[in-house]
Amino acid sequence: MSAQAKGIMSPTEYFISMDIQSSIQAAVGILGVITNIINIKTFLVMGASTDGVTLTLMSLAISDLCVCISALGLCIGSLLLSQEAKWLLRGKTASFLLVVDPAFVAVFFATVFQLFTVTTILITIYLAVTRCLCVIRPLQFRNVITVRKTLIVVAAFSLFALANRIPILSLTGVTMAFDPRINATRPVTSMHPHREIIKDIVWAGVDMTICIGAQVILSVCVGIMLRGLKSAAEFRTSASSAGNAGSDEQKSKEKLGTKDARIIKQLVLVSCIFIICNTPKLITYLGTAIQPEFNLTGQYRMFYQSMCSLFSVFDTINSSVNMFVYYIYNAKFKRVLDNLGRADKI
Image 1 (cartoon, rainbow, N blue to C red):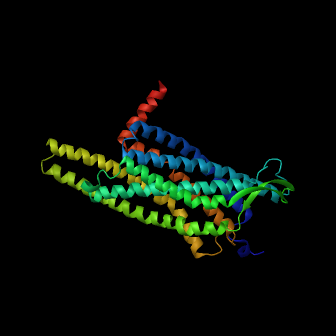
Image 2 (image 1 turned 90 degrees about the horizontal axis):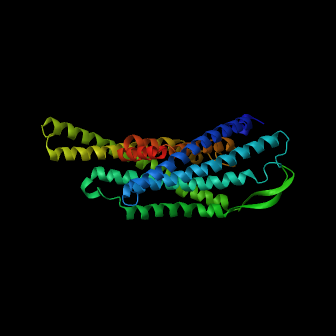
């Protein structure tokens, strides 16, 4: 068989790639579980029940926590699936350990992972767009993020993501069957004949659209927010040079501007992290659209699965590092977290 017929990756390269990526994702996922629990606790103390922006950030942390937990389940399924495949290639039996088809574990958690990833993307877009509106029209949109609006928006995002994954989950099941690969009867993955059709519809209509749309929208928002930061800095410089910095009114405006600037910097960095982490997924989706054989069943299926594993690693990274951004650019978050840390030591 030619190298072309085999595809881009050999089975050995594929297994090595999947094992490395799953191990990295597991480590990042554990970090993400810890950081997002800290985020949620901190935002609760900061008053998430009374402030719309804080509640939105806490909602993002909850979604990110679910992403990281499902990522750990996906890693377990992927590692077991890879290990079983290697055992079978060596002519060994895996039935003594893997009493459940690891493919089901991987497929189930991959679907749940995508559910919460979509929710995270939508909340990130919501934060960036609302902050952009505050930069463009500060008087009209300064208090646009209220607790009530946030609850409605986050609930709508969650229901939208759930509605897109329920059909896929409902067409995936487990049934007791004889598995000739291990010469034993065990629970194996059972997929409805229409599952792949539904999955392709969701992929084309939702996942790819949101992936590309988020990249474009957040790139525009980052540009607008950076321009707003530059304008604010120029205004403060010109005001100081004009000799108005000593007045109480000017100091108040300057303080408010500094606070807004820190919030914008925080959201710019969060958006930039998302844009970077979203790029592998965007490349994979575009590759699937351009090359018909670049999918789960095509000639390049092993390379495709490796790329899917890679972008899920980046999705997990995106959901794990926000705490460090908040700690640097959110003075209230830093103060509350430091106080919580000191209280825990007492």
